[in-house]
Structure formats: structure tokens, C-alpha cells
Length: 402
Image (cartoon, rainbow, N blue to C red; front, top):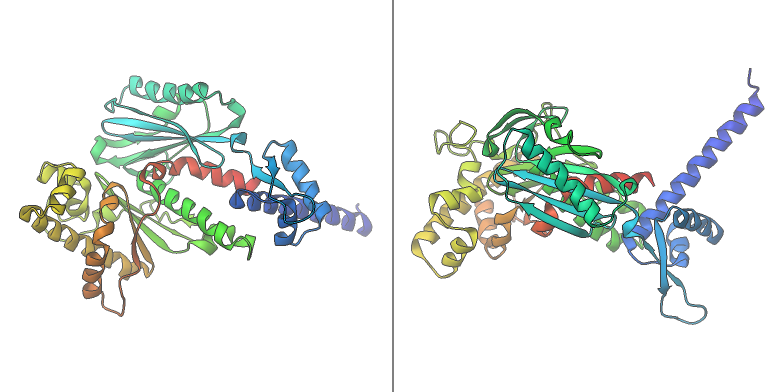
């Protein structure tokens, strides 16, 4: 039987190990979000001794997670070394599936897009399509000379609803899918894979890049604020694409709901017995505000539509007035339910910035309580970066476990 002294020694060793791991992660996160920093700054911000900082820097360098790139300008005395995270230490891939093809993107540890490619291959249920996706993943990794042990994983997005396990696509109307097992595709990808709804992935990307920006802003005050929940709690993201989806992020995670359908805002009824939706019901939010509405009802691309709106086309102006009225109805409904910020993202959002005040005025009229409509905003994440969301989940997990 272990005596009391031995037991206490084991506890002390465990506690010491935990503290070392904790400090190492804090040092790494600080370097990551600061982008460039000196060891003296690390010691000052984290309130650690220089020997402790040096010990952690040595460990991180040995794991090829950081590197030194010259010196900061001198303010008197010896110049401080510039310390940065090594972007080539790890990579993740995102595969975005849609009805008429798929896109693939390779990102490094610092979330830079290293390479991307679009394949105009119509989705099909057979093995040929799945093999094409698998080959594209291998091709982009080989093309960029990325070692297999540096690939964190492959995130796959689909414009559809998944079951609780995120393995079966219960319905993806725009792709004509029902009860489709994602394993049909991942079986041809020789890396760890995770699949998710495309709107959730886009929301996570917006969330991630906003988190990183805010982490830099508060870095000098408190590096512990780099946790997601402190920076961005309680936001509903609405993705306006060919379909309409959403995701609610709060307390450091995407809310999934009882049946993994939380955020399917596109199928919220805003006009009972209204337009027919792809889901088979009538009056859904998606039937009034998706990008597909503009292309199918007017036969214009988004560029053409908003160009004619700018030129004062009376027909387009009336259509757009109805469009933002319906958009405001949906946003107001979501705000009443969540009592949090509503962020519009996706390809349509790019064109709405100059009309944000008009939308807010409509929201003020619709909301039952005091508000100035500033709870509504547009995504700040570049649309191309928003497509990397599923890959960024791997980056986030990696950073948290260093």
C-alpha cells in the first residue's frame, strides 16, 4: 500500500506537470495571437520568470512550433529577438461540397490559405465522385510538399442537415441528398475527417478570425482573454448563399440542439402559405432571402442585380425593398429568440454594407423593445476565408492542446 508521503509526492509531480503544460500552452497562445513578440514581452504579460519562458521557448522550438526571425529595433541595449509561430508546423484541409462541384483549400497553422482549387464536377452518388474528392485532397498535399504527419485533418462541408453523429446527411435539398453517409466520401481520404453543415463552418471561420483580431487587441491586458467564450459569446450567424443556414455560437462552442439542427434558420416560416421551399414546405425564410431567389426569380447574378440597383432600376429597387423587408422579419425573429448579436454572412452579405442603415431602421420598427438596431451586423471575414471554417476547427483544437 502506498504510504502518505509517496501519495503526496505523486500529487506534487502531477501538479508540477500540469503547471508546466499550462504555461507552455499559455506561451504558445500568446506567441500565436501576437504574431511577433519578444521573450521579455512574454515574461511581462504572463508574469513568468525569464528562465521559465526560456524553458518553454526551447520546448516549442524543439517541436518546430516556433522560430526566431531577426531582432526588434533597439530601444537601447541589446536587441530583442523576434519570436513567431512556424506556419509550416501543421496544416488542415477544407473540402466544400455543393451540387455542381466542390472546392478544396489548404491552410497552414497560421490560417493562411496556402493553395485552393475548384472542381466543376457535378455531385453524384457513385464512387467516381467520391474518389475524385479523395484524390484532390492527396493532390493538394503532394503539390505543396506537406508531410503526412503535419496534416491535422480534413474538414468537409455540405449544405445540408446532419444526424447527431455528423456522419449521415439527413437532407441536402440543393444536392438532392437524403440519408447519405459521409463515409462514402471519407473512405477515400487517407486522413482524419470531420463533416459539418456549411453554414456552421462559415460561422466558425467568422468567429475564429474575429477572435484572433480581438485577442491581439487585449493581449497586453490579459492573454487569458484569448479564449473564445470571453471574446465572442452569444452570436447568431446567418449565411445567405444559394440556401440559408445559420449557427449560434456561445460559451466556446457551436450550439447543436437536441437533433443537431440548431441554426436551421432558413426554414423558419415568415409568410404562412407563401413561396414553395426546397424543403417541401411553404413560406420559409430561405425562399425569400437566399441568393438563389435573385438568380431564379430575376435571372441575374448578384453583381448584375446590385449594379442595376445602384443605377436606379425601378423594378430592381422594388424587389430589393421587399427583399430587405423579409430579411428584417427574419432577423427580428432571431433577435427576439436569442437576445444576442445577429451577423449576416455569405456571398449576399458582401453587397449589403451600403444598405445596413436601411435594414436597421426596419429592425427598429419591428422590435418590441428599445433598440437602435446595432445588434445587427455584417460578417467581417472575407468570403473566401469563410470557406475554410471546417479546417479551422482542426487548427483550434491543435492550438488548445499544444
